[in-house]
Amino acid sequence: MNRYGAMMQRHWQRWLPEPYAAISDQGTFFAVLGDLVAQQVDELADDLAGDDRPGEGYLAKVGRLSAARRQAEESILPELVLLAPAGEEDDDQDDEDDVAATAQAHGRQ
Image (cartoon, rainbow, N blue to C red; front, side, top):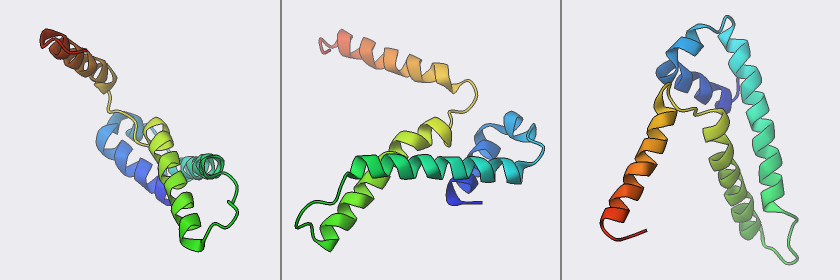
């Protein structure tokens, strides 16, 4: 199991215990999903990094590739690995509504 599968398994065990308990073969389930996440992160990181740049030095290339990987993970992990705990999807909208109402009350938008 890769690091994404292990991360997903720990997250689900802690924050999504009911769906986690319903998985009959957890090792295989999280290994397969971890591989799929890794593939998606790799593909998105490649797209974000783009082609090598003329005259780009080693450190500049490492920085560009690292930044692209981090950006890809920031996009994919919340959607596929670090799912919101049960019942928290509505809380996010409530938080956004609270922030908007507070800003409006103080004359900001």
